Length: 193
Image (cartoon, rainbow, N blue to C red; front, side, top):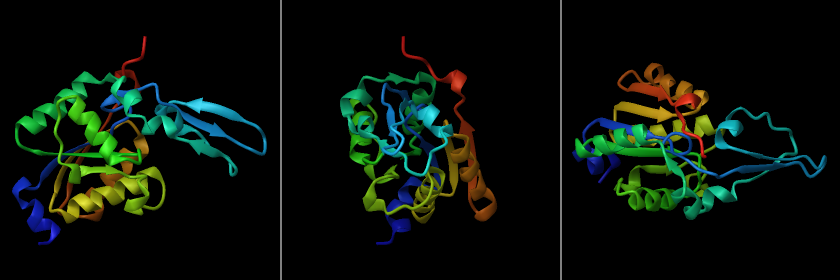
């Protein structure tokens, strides 16, 4: 059975969500350090989106592999409610996250009473996926996987302008694909007290 046949029951519509600073805000930090200069900094996902890396920078994403940090985060209720309503309507829901463990995302969603088909969760930095390029390019590769499954009408929520831009490029590149991408603005993201 090819992918299209396997997922035909879902129809052509899918709503796709990023995780960090879209569905939830966590205390997870990206640790950036440069062994040559001794420079070190801890960045939130939002800060990392615009951080200019140097050639010898090294990154530690270990906070993003910790289910307890993820579960302790603050849900962005209005976006999470869109996810729940989409599932209740019977429309497919997908996740495309820069994290590297789709099972962790599945477990987090189940912890919050949301059951998303594990085949529709793409943790784009998982080495098994073999996605190449920037985060936005890897997210585009994940969208192409959804297109291969037969999805044509996308709604997408993400907090990074580059990811939104590359998602919207699918409208031009693939005439049969319709993409409506929504940028989650910083002012809409709750802060930790």
